[in-house]
Amino acid sequence: MRCTVYLTSLALGVLLSLMTTSVQAGVVVVCNASLPVAEKINSATLARIYTGRSIQIDGTGILPVNLAPGAPERTIFLHHIIQQKDDEYIGYWLVRKSIGRGTPPLEFKNAADLQRFIRSTPGAVGYVDEQHLEPGVRCIFTIP
Image 1 (cartoon, one colour):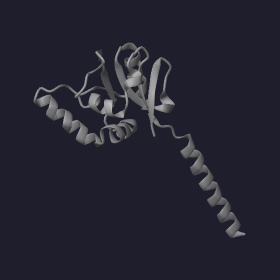
Image 2 (tube, helix red, strand yellow; image 1 turned 180 degrees about the vertical axis):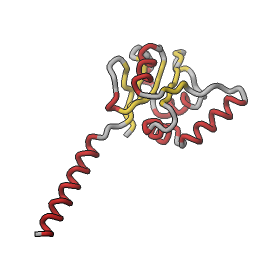
Image 3 (cartoon, one colour; image 1 turned 90 degrees about the vertical axis):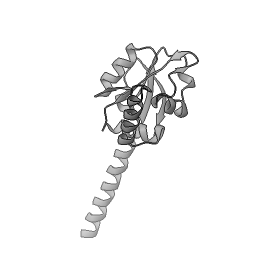
């Protein structure tokens, strides 16, 4: 009897774990809906944009925006796109700023504020959890 209860509990735990995992969304890269060069933005281009090495695509100005340090979406984005941890990325921008080579992207506390800015700013690009995606922004691609 105890073995049956244990196996049932184990099976229920595994099932709940699988259900939770399948509900988890990815991080999506989004831009202003009117950005004419959105289809040209890929992970390599984003890396150049978010490190200040590129500010235009085919003459169109691109303005990257970030979520605040510590946001899980930022951690995923930095890991997959820039291959840096948050503290490395912050340090990178401290050095660039101190030698006059640019300023880091604007930061927003939450996905709603970030997307509001993107909707109202031509050329703006950012990222959010897919579950928090709002109408009015254009999804470029998903980071798993």
